[in-house]
Length: 109
Image (tube, rainbow, N blue to C red; front, top):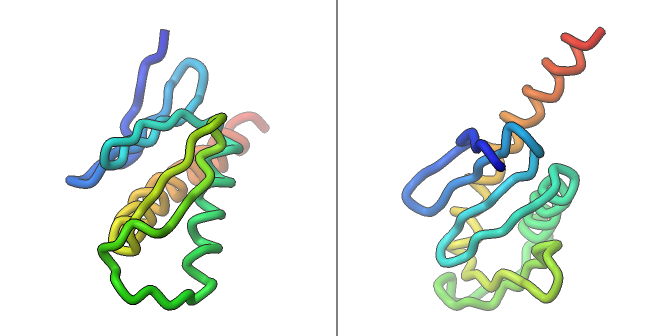
């Protein structure tokens, strides 16, 4: 049974990690997605790479951005504004996970 620790949360969503199995859950809008830690970092990289492309988006509220969720047959469809809010959540949680992993490696030596 999972026992979740909140990595980050705000009015737009949350990211938690199970202390038992280490899977990560992202709740954003009406989506709830489970990731392995590796898939979570890949998802965050996908979002960052999309933002680097500098694609012209005329309507920042139009849902026209499709993201692979690493869950079979599931994608996220977001507006540019939602993508920016998601990026904030992902960045905060990723920074915490990186620090946690560095501390774990240091304590294991």
